[in-house]
Length: 532
Image (tube, rainbow, N blue to C red; front, side):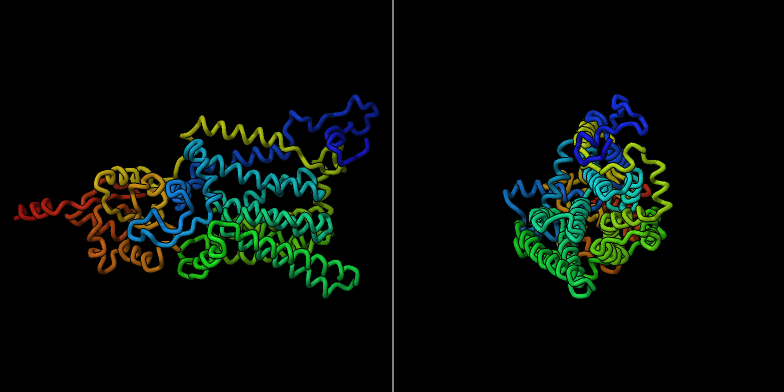
């Protein structure tokens, strides 16, 4: 049976050595899951299992969801912060509204489990796209599945419910277009897709700036080849590619202005990126801790990257190699960039590994002989759609499956705070990372003291919060208007309030949270007068 790229001929392969076509084996019938669908299913389930230990504990998840409610209430995009107490009315641009909308829909569908399901499906879809790209590049099915699994494990830090996870998909598509264009496997017209891609990206997450830098790096690589390549014909072709990529980059940049704030979005983003205090405050902007639990997952890929390139007999795609190195530099400087480096570099690594003879021999040993040399077809998405629908239906019927990790988000204690705040709207001082949860379940009546939106809170207010939390001199005056305090029990403030008769505990102290309420003045004076 001859190999052909058509769907029909790729679905049916004759058993090797069998002359009778009636003995053909239907490997990919429409009603059977393909290996790509199995990869999607396995990873979706694996990510869902993390919904009880970290997926739903990003400090900003609550305000990401309430962002959509605030937009609907105002009947327009926000320019001022509606969630804070002390910082109410500060400038705020909801530039991540599309990503927030996805989480909001998950919450409306099935609460916490719905959010976890949406997160798992987006990530699994990204990895499935990666698998399909590797198969198209000629990587064997077992090897493609293995590399996809390594990519999923290496980018585990992105397994959190927040708009950032969509940037992995957008960067994967951007790098793919640059690589294919460099190899002459797509025309310059295909680059026009970068326009709508970046228009969506700019309304989803600020990492679109990194996408524009990715295009700029690809332009520089093509321009360098246009000057330095020894072959005159290839120099001319590289210059043409550089020109087309430059125009595409310019067009993509213009399309990012299709957002609610236009050009003002750029200074808003750089206001955050340009503040060293803000960058150091959040751990995911810091360099990766290779001693941390789970760090070996991405460290393994970083070690494999130079190894497979050195051993491979296949020349790497220069644009892919350059972009991999660019994102590796960023990944080493900030943990937030690690998942982006993984999706940018794994295709280059997988293609290089296919050029290592002994690895290729191992992969062929586990590849069905009937399809070992067949052209990889674009796998149908019907099975994936069915799996995704099944996950959503399951989530709707299992709303109590997902939950917060109490070590990160002590939901019981914070629910007690909200219960105490229903009458009179008392001022509450609480932990920095708990503001999102309180906004999620308390707004519009409850307003937070602080949350993780550093560009809204401002450096001075954040420093004031930590000064009070650490019970530094003057903390009592700064808490003069506060009626409820919810902090971690190990903080100096909690230890001071535990021995202060002006405060009483509302919530039984555990290892995660303690809640105090100020005792009314008349009761305090009476108790002191009764003392001998």
